Amino acid sequence: MTKTVKKVVISVIVAIVALVIIVNCFTIVNAGHTGVVVTLGKVNDGVLQEGLHFKIPFVQQVVKIDNRISKLEVTTEAFSKDLQTVSTTLAINYRVDSAMSFSLYKNVGADFQSVLVVPAVNEVLKAITARYTAEESVTNRSLISDGLIEGLNEKLNASGLYITDVNIINFDFSEAFINAIEEKQVAQQQLLKAETEKQTAITNAEAEAEAIRIKAEAEAEANNVIKESLNEDIIRSKFYEKWDGKLPQAMGVDSIITSIDDMTK
Image (cartoon, rainbow, N blue to C red):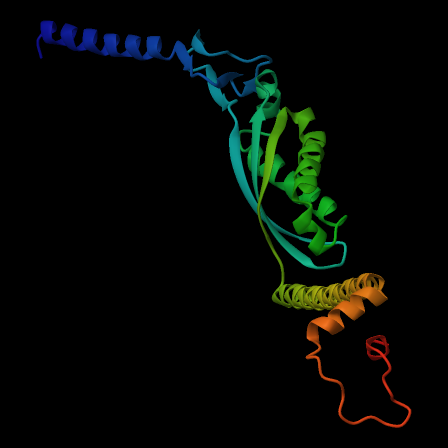
């Protein structure tokens, strides 16, 4: 190999090494992240914000922490107040406080989700589920969600983790409990149906009695009107209208008619 070739090779090697060193002198923190600087294994206080930053090559390492809202889905079991097994699936939104990224990484590491968040979810959920019966758990989802947010923040805020939202995706119960609930609902529906039919029958009877009363009052009123309107002159007039002019052919001894007036009496 000639000296010229050796010089070219050495120059190329030097250039590559220099390029590697230069590249390792800088780091880029992406949007929504913070950079935790680790110098020879020691976590530095403070964080690097978004953008381009200088670091000591091969001596310092920058760990990127995602400070955007992250989603975690957890399925766990707990006991209700009435000792029913409740299997719950939760969707949890949380974020890392950017100012505390370095302390979180220093004290817990990068896997803080499985180390801190998941155990806290299990613990808080069990405590809240124990306050309600299995049936109440279904009807009080919003209260349980609010309780989870409050309880989780009490446990995790000091570490730099903040729970922003908790959604209960599903509640699952034992087959025996589900059957008992269905039987209870059927019994309640049958009772409601019986009460409705009873009330309808009472209403119909009352309506019929009221109709009979109104009809009787109307008939009585009509009879009174007729009675008041019938005087002796009207009766005599009606008789004359219908009389054919002939006197009765057969009469008893005591039934002698002396005048037309006697026939109208």
